[in-house]
Image (cartoon, rainbow, N blue to C red; front, top):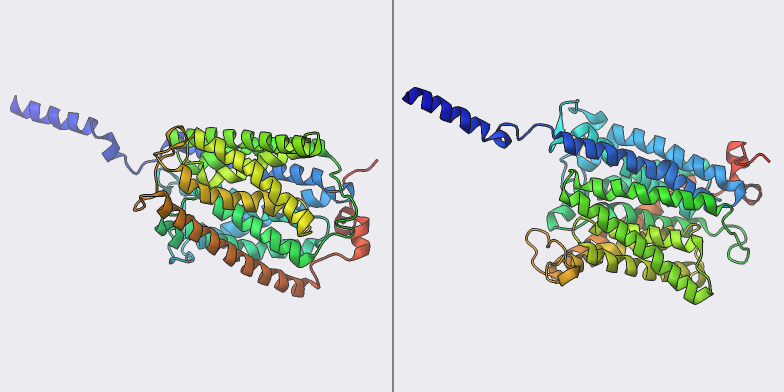
Length: 432
């Protein structure tokens, strides 16, 4: 009888410890959610960003924008598989990963990253590596050679994006300091925004800017693309929880609230300033709200998201006016004032709205080892400033190098006048 009880107790103990027995096994729910999120983030670039940008340029350049986004998707994916993932997430040191995961070495279908397949984690991160250089093309739309664009995007991905990703998410020095960047305010939006500003300044303005009006040729296309971005961003931010849990759900709802508030704020400002709200303003405000909530999305609550969206709409609107009208920098599709400024803003204010002591505006606390808004803010500021400086310097050097290798970054004036669709691809977006 004693033996039976002992054996029964052992069996009961094993049944009560499933988490211990299967701690390293794949979680089906989490895997399904990240598979979905991966598709959503890729959907943001093709077709979302492609359509958003293509509608904003003149009709003679619409196909070139689609082609740039599509080709960057291909090149960035190949480079990420070969070496980018290893540089970003290989063990390495505080500054850069190593080559241990080149060609996804050591990763098969049973290899896990946490409780999801590492192949899925690598693919999810690949979609971020795709959209980041694709964002930059909005700054030099309608005037950069296709060959220069491809070479610049490839080098930039490995020299700028991969190291910054390692700093923040791959075990690097900013992550160790406790910097908060849930889904890419620093890694994606600040790097892309700063690179865009540098590129716009190096290339110079489009012919006729700012005297000649260059209105979007198809706002219907732009608004459709914006809708795809909004929906895809749920995978961008919600998927960054890397689990199907409360963090993911909260990231999705705060993303939606900030986007809504950003769009509404921009509309109200235009209504008051110009007499009428514009469709272009509404979708631009939405993107500002999305970019600004991105670094904070896993750390703040709905109340904080509402204020972040409000700040995004107001500050990014004024940044857009300042860059184009005061500084007269031809960042063609407003990449820096929307993504760059939004990323900077969100990366700083997360230090405030992560606090648990703000009532309905409270978040979910500070990073381990940090105990106040001031401490978290100082870490965030270090992350923001270091990323801006590194990205600006590296981007400038890359552009100059690419210019030498390709015989100049820009198409000539005649080609710019004809449009990049015909000049670069011998095709036309519209055959009417």
